[in-house]
Length: 95
Length: 471
Image 1 (spheres, one colour):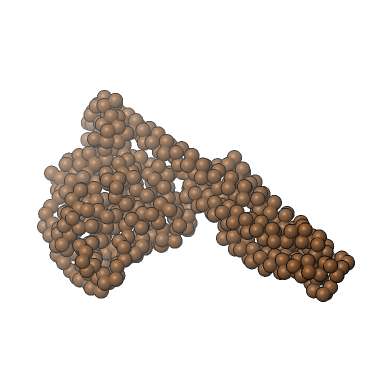
Image 2 (spheres, chains in turn cyan, purple):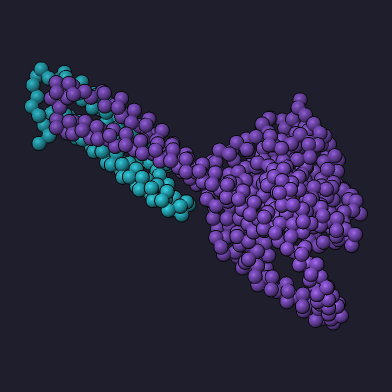
């Protein structure tokens, strides 16, 4: 159950929260788009065979770490968007 | 066929640092983009405060969203840091590779000079000892060839040509190409060794030292020795205009310029670019060698011109290009961009280095122009294929500093076919020129910007074609 109790005094504050969450949802959606564009155009390139062993391994590991972090950031962003939408839906149901 | 370009200075020989530099730029861009996104996320996060969540009696999912936003921010911060670090490391690695390559190239040249000197020294000693024997054996072989029936002689030369064709892969081997390049810059050392010039003096006077003696001296010596026999002997040339076209466009990029190099018998194309209220500018396009025989005939773009141009003397093709430019109205004050393929590239570099013209740019494709001292202020792009022997015969870029673009075409497997030097074909250089235009390498884009005149409405282009003949 995603709902919490609503008191009459909190109605105005709730309307303000809903507005803020709407702005957050719009902002997160736009951000997710820009993030995917940045990932698609500039993700760390693979450089196998273009240089020597040690440097290649160092780069490969660091680039792999970066790819993982990028993936993680994408998942967190998706979760933030999903939860914001869920919160908005819940607020809408609660009036 | 690889589309990778190695773009650098004259020292770029082993590691394709261009890819590292490109990757560094990509990562710097990624870091900038992610930094901006992180900032936007932080701004967004400030909108929904903890107090608003509490007083608005927010559902659990709103708190979960806040936690997810915090996690996103933390991940983005790590990404920004890693991409920044990687970008800096790649740029550093590329710089160090370039330095190492420059040092290696310099050492290879010094070793080749030493080897050439020793070989020349030993040659002079053994030549004296072996001269009688070599004369007898050589004379006998020459006599045998001369007295051979025509069909057997033809069969002998066919066999020789067949052997070369069967082993043509060697002629497109990048290692052989580098060997030829080092041999070219060691020919003067060979001569000095043979003349027993003290090594210290030879080193001082050569490319590795003051650069007084070099490939040009060696080529001039060869031409000087051969010319009494009618071989590599310079002759007067005549130039005539063979065609004019009007209403063309101004050459805009590398591929466009490569496509304007004449191929159908004409050797020189000159585009006159006229803009109202401004002095005319010119683009000169020079063709490659047409006649590979050592004895001069009617063709001015021949081997005699090649050797003379490498020697730095007045080659027939050089004089022809000068004459054509004078006919086209080029003066010492006119801004000129030179583009040349093969011998045309060598002549273009000689014209740019002559100081007789106001050179606005120089662009060579497979030109053996390594030893031509082109002034540093001239925007200069030299394109070579790693498997192309022809530019290697011009030696290393010891006295100029072009944006040198190298591309490996075959990955060790040259195409089958009758062509002896497939990597030297103009069609392949045109393909490479297209890749130059597609590259976002700052050295290339900056060079193109420097070479390209500003586009002005009302500009007209008149293209004139010239043909030169000896005699």
